[in-house]
Image (cartoon, rainbow, N blue to C red; front, side, top):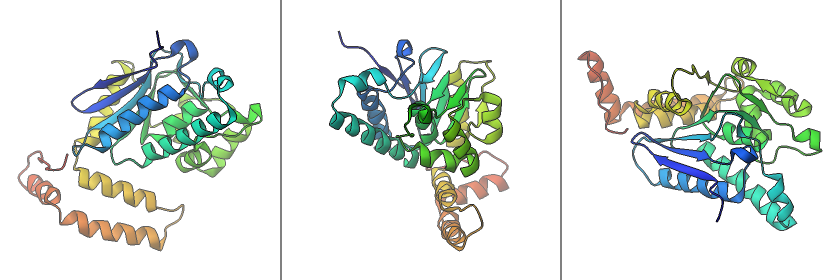
Length: 261
């Protein structure tokens, strides 16, 4: 009987993708990538404002990276194809029009941290550690980590993490911006992530997407390009039905009912 390596839960507000390989520290296989791609394609085809939560089974590991045991069974060409596919899929997730949250239930190492970095936000249990330890094996991050990590924590911190390969505990990860929130533990981690997701997706999808585009155009220092992109979106968004509804709701002291959610 084939191993079940992931589960997909369809909730009203989101899809939940869970890696179910705790005995292998939820390491990434080709089958895991199949499941993730299925979720991304499903959400890409939807017009509502649902999002994606990525998590894993157990408390020890969110994902320890690529499955090195599977690597031994692949030809060099197959291994390269898996790497390219994972990188492209993570970039696709990072650029997707829906909001994604990585709910880190345990350690996020190597490709596991790269998967978390590909999401818009990261919420972590208190005991989580994060690392890109590839340099210790004479390798480099292969799933877009060399690009995603500097974008999230800045080039200096990213370089230090990648060149030492050291694990970063939750509190430090929060301080450096690697994670966005430490879970309280009052509710299941996925439920906290879903509540976090709703705090974003309750707003106008038009405004959300515009803000994301503007932020993507931002540079380390104020730039003419970034200001130009912002100026263009200010005009577009202000003319939308959602913007008119938001202003009207403010004046009438009520909760706005956005058309694009």
